Structure formats: C-alpha cells, structure tokens
Length: 298
Image 1 (tube, rainbow, N blue to C red):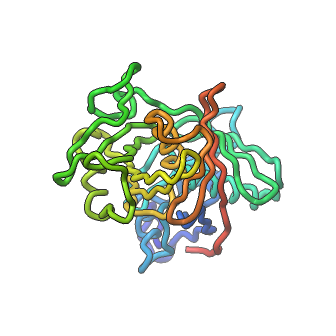
Image 2: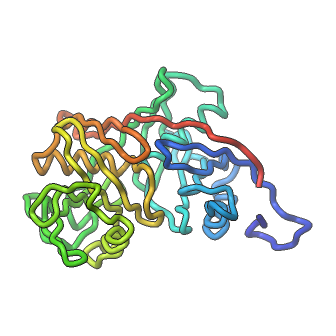
Image 3: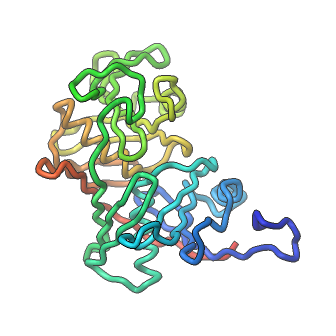
C-alpha cells in the first residue's frame, strides 16, 4: 500500500502492524509514537480494513506521542469507512495491550491515554483482561448531541419515543465522548434481539436527523437487572461484534430507565463485558479482554 506522501513505486512505505481483537471487535494497531501524524491516511486505513482486499478490521488505531506531559501517549483511530470517532472502548483495551506487549509491561501497568474524548486510563490485569476508567458519561442531550426533547432534568433524554421504519422505539441518549442511542423497547414492548433487523434499522438510526453527529445505536434485551444482551450498529463501522463505549452507555441508560443495576454484565455477540457505573464518583469502569491475533508488514 503506497504512502500518502508518494505514489512512486520505488518509494513505497513499509508499515509494521499488529492485529488485536476485543470480543471480536478487531483492529489494526500501529506504533506511531515517533511522530504526531498517523503514518496512514484515512483512505489508506479504509483500504487496510477491507476484509477481502486488505488485512481486515473494524478500524486502524495509532499510538501517537502524548499531547501533555501528564499522559503516556495518544490514541487516534480511523473507522473502516475512513471516518474518525472520538474514542473506542474495545479499541482502547486493544491499544493498551498492544503497547504493553511492545514495552514488556505486566499486570498493574496503568496508562494515561489522550483521546478526542479526553484522558482514558486502562490498567492491565493479572488474568490478561484490561480494566478501563472510562470517565463520566455525558447526559445533556444537546452535548450528546441529539435534538430529541429532554425527558428529565439536566437536559437528559431518557426513554424518549422515536419513530423509525414505522415503529415506535424508546431512545435514551448517552455520550461516552461519542454519541449513543440506547433502545430498550419497541412498540411498547421490551426489545427482543432476535426480532430486530439490525441491517435494516441500524443505518436508519445512525443517520437520523435527530442525531446531528450521527450515532452509535445499541439494542438491549434485559435478562435480569445485573445481566443484559446487546447488539450494536456502530457509526462508521456498521455491525460489529462488540462496542465498549456502547456497553458503558447501555448500563448508564439501563440505570436511568430503572432496568439495570449499576454493576452489570453486558453480553455482546463477541462475548461479555463487565460494566460498573460507580455512584460515588460518577465514573464508569469497563473490564474485558484484548487479545493478539497476528502481525505483519504492509
């Protein structure tokens, strides 16, 4: 794949990468800490994510130099369509594991990572999982952003009805630095995931005009207050097997709607994440796996 700086075949750039996945949400990781600009353009990253003609992945993640003396490095990510989200929960676990593997860091290692959604702090666990301090949720609808009318004080949009594809869905709007629409019921009944045509309604939610910056959409089926099932249509990536920020937003919306506990297991198509919304600090903690798949050079 040619460098964006030159199309001359005699000066093609060689870029080393490693691929990691978190619950099947897979990413191409590049150590870019030698310069502040990603070594691949959004267009090149898009081609790299192609599962038939490239490496394949839900996005390309770059570890760049820190933007402040108090942080360790910076995360940038290009989605598989070339767009750039503010943050990615599964991606940041994979990024932390990637850098820890490169640097030989073990359990207990904490990183302070700059993202477009603010400073995120993952900690490597002894069992190989990664626990991430995801910060505080943003609940003011205008800041999420959504133009849906608030249903609670503080501008919160919780269980607001929205018509999509001729059906009445309830939507709660939560930002984890990136926007999420959480759907727990449709036509007055609890969501059953087997009845949701994700490939049909997912794009309709993503580009709905009530979400000015588009949105990630999570459809949630409650098994118990401490256990839910969720599937996601990600903004810029489509159907993925997991979404870390979406799992966090799922629990926040579940608590606000009175459907879940503050500590909850969220089962995604790729496997479970454990989410806790700490009442004392208002912070959300996400714990889940991040695993090396293979490495190569493009």
